[in-house]
Image (cartoon, rainbow over all chains, first blue to last red; front, side, top):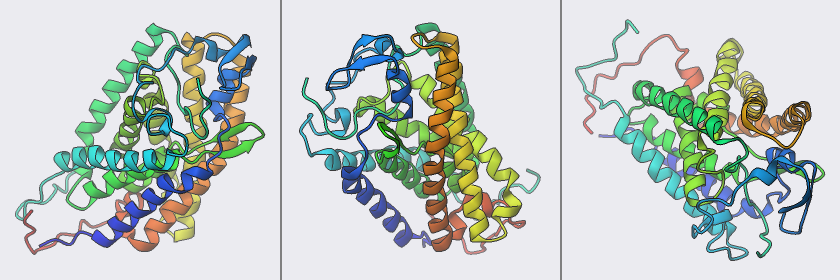
Length: 118
Length: 236
């Protein structure tokens, strides 16, 4: 029999899905702190690419997975699909992380308790 | 290239620091994560393993939510202290690392060669320093839910600022384009502000989990003296 707090898990997942799927549309599109620093000193064009001056971001290469169907948190680059990409991301993260942690977990063995000496 | 609305990139791209330093921090990240995998096992059981997967998924979601901190500058959750307080530092570092790995592989966010630096800063430095702060404040954290939330806020603020110092170090070793003093001042200044947002999100999240399932908060659970041993056999 299980005593897993399934309702709590479900609620937690729902919150994550709502944040990634809905609230993400309200996120600021300004560069984050790191990007703001790497762009300092450059003039940028409309898409945020450095076109003049000297800055750290000029050394940045094109992203190796820029052709990914989920690149830039969109579906194939389509506008307005951030929420869908976010939901996919939440579910993939849950599957990968949850799967890894499930494999790594201590199996509960009734006769065996964690040693107290630790 | 069409302009994208919304998020573009949140983490270090390829080439921001040079190849030797990227490799060095890649090595540090691999060693650190191997250590975390070895130690995570004892913190994972039938109840906490699903929780840890959900915490990782939650961090992925909240990292998408950039909030403004200054005109033209935003910030987002890093998540180290949040994970460490809820699922422990070893599992927590793995949670943040998995998020960073998936962002780099699937979402073109954070360079593949920069994974080592990004993991070192956010998953290792941020998580363990944040957890250290939380442990130092454990007496306050165990006193009341307000104390736990205050602890979460402070740990998260510190985790944000020290993670940004990780970048400053890597830049000092293998970056170019801007004076080091300027990088230091801007990074710590921006992240002192971003840390307030990180602190609020972490405090609210930890507070909500503590209200619903206090047994799923690692920081305060492990401070309780007894290991509760259930006599009913649990068969998986």
